[in-house]
Length: 178
Image 1 (tube, rainbow, N blue to C red):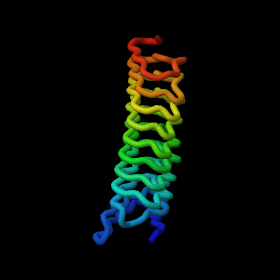
Image 2 (image 1 turned 180 degrees about the vertical axis):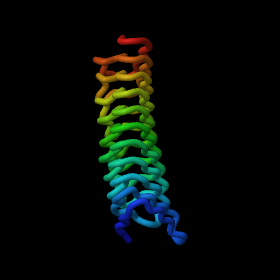
Image 3 (image 1 turned 180 degrees about the horizontal axis):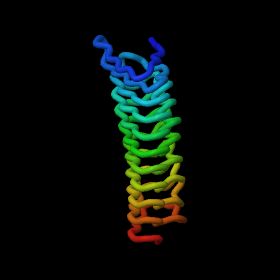
Image 4 (image 1 turned 90 degrees about the vertical axis):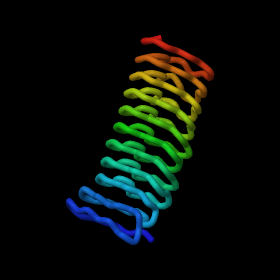
């Protein structure tokens, strides 16, 4: 059963169901029995099935469809996130199009912005790996690092502006602007 909850400055807990609602102005459709926590205008608006998700921020995970155990925090984080489990997104506008990606950690504004189907990636830093679409098992740490990656896997990249043009597999790169 879907319902619409809309209020200003309200706090709602339904003791019969494990979902807590703390909307700012408009909340949208949420299934009441899935154990999800949402907070923010339009956060989780179209969450249809999925459980144990924590969604906080304006326009955050608006289109979360079938997803479990995700933590998504920040303005427009994972806005078009469709499916995927056990992902952590912290920052503004990252992981916008995840649809099938699992166990990814994205921290920093626009980090992993294009990531769609990648799994087991750790991406930390402003705009780091923001062109990566389908890569797996990458560790990328540093602002604007890994900008050349699109479908690359098993890379370790550490340092700011590192690997701006690299798009390949099984690389290790450490340093600034290398």
